[in-house]
Length: 174
Image (tube, rainbow, N blue to C red; front, side, top):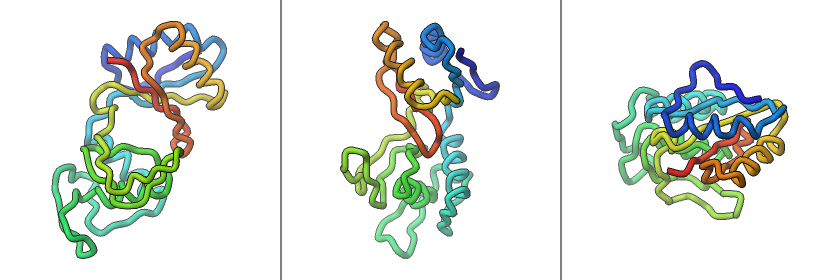
């Protein structure tokens, strides 16, 4: 039982994969919550999480995608949003930057690696190669649907559970 939120944008490739998954969902209620997002949309999402988590850096401007500044605490220029985004990663919010950027704070992955100093690419949502799903049945049920779909040949590359976002991020094969 797959549904798509009304405001979700899907390109042709994402739409095909979503509808290829649908027959495998059975009675598992799955909702597509996000599809294609422009870099500015990704920045707005970062802004929302920053507000929710109480992350405040004086240079942050939710409309300034490309502008760089040099905060007194740093020895080099960064995007106005870069420290805010890095702090969210540090706090465990899994979110790609709107544009490729270096992670400025400790950010431990599940495998124990630290992404501080690593360049993290812009969101695959901006490239139109990812979508997010959620559902009341929970992560295990969603993963089961994804495993079955992928085993049947649906063009799913991989997925990542984003507990903080209450979603499963799905990357597609392109």
